[in-house]
Image (spheres, rainbow, N blue to C red):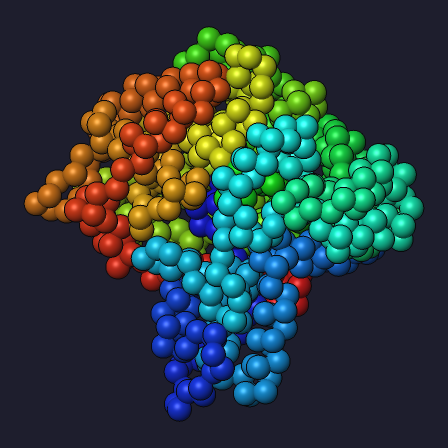
Length: 600
């Protein structure tokens, strides 16, 4: 799970839109006109990520080149997962841009596509529109039959509960059982005998459905088969990268080989175990499909991502030292069903070489794997992306918004250090607390589409809850504690009204309302600013965290629905007023990130 889904993941190339050109060419039907695309582009700031790899060994540099090539495959697959027409829409846009001589109108659309990685975009005032000739976005995205409803899937599963594992699997694509799809899947098994071997029983199941195809029937196939051509190529590239880096970092090479097999078996256990328990030297990489935010039907389908990172060694060693005593933090949380946690968390601060797919853009931190059983057996790894988390450009853009909405006495309470500390302990927060319900179910299985909202809420609250204990043991100074709390307040200030499916923004709104209810924050209508009562902070956070942990432990989805409904309430006169002030104060709403390693 990662922190900045609220910002979303964005990519652009370094070409920045020029001033408006006149006369603007008339675009074909379906392409957003320049007067509508320009405001969307102007609110996104350029952010270049440059990581020096000149001192790496020849083998490490060769591995980086192979891994970047594999990352490009994951980028294409992610776009395909979001929208079935993404690749064709982008190709047509590039052709149109070349034909028209690359005017602002088409350059803007290319930037928008790179930003959202699909042909539709969410507008500032809500809603989602296609800015290229393509179907409007649907909650199923391309993980399920395009346009299928949750009600239809629920009805199918009620009639065919034996298919639930395949239909709701984290890394499966759901199809209608029509001859065309079934024959295509069987052809891929024939083309790649390794997949046939690694997935026993799959061929027989597909042949059984082909004997009586029925579009009302659904079936799920593993990503390894759904994206067979790409997974076979990625498998080869990871092994080539492993060969290149073998002499310099044997453990990293072993991880790459394990992950390459995972991509074909669709079982990530060997790669996750190697990833979490190994100690790499200079490079690290998150490879696979982990986060489920893009599945707006059930919140179970993971989207492809790929992050290639270089460790900041000195800072990483200091971070690991700071995490001693983690069991004591777990035991201090306000719930009774405590678990035993590993104190030696593989945490690291990294510079980004390049990100792809779901993780691309402004993601500040991740903790993986999400599988509760894997986490119990092997632990989890925390990746802190210093290139984004410590960016002075981002901080300089945020500060005017902060100062616009808080009373002057609190202006100094937001700091980059406070933000980075809150972010780090948010990720640790995923490691702590409830991961199974009282009846033994993984929390994500019990809460389905509500899981991401509640889990991110828990992690936010843990980061604020443990701050008091960290200050008492000397890890934070009083000023630094205030900085963490200040970052916690900024975190919950939504600039626009969130949609129900936006896990991050919904849980931020819930915190704002709970903090208002508890007196942590108050709003002065006369000045239009917020004041913070730091004396109440810990107790109010503890109260909300206690409720969240109990909801996770009970695994009662209707109770979670009611909890979210109670606190995810938007008031235009309050939340809307604050959001508008922040938007007016910020120069940029989003960041357009490019990576020097990709030649951008």
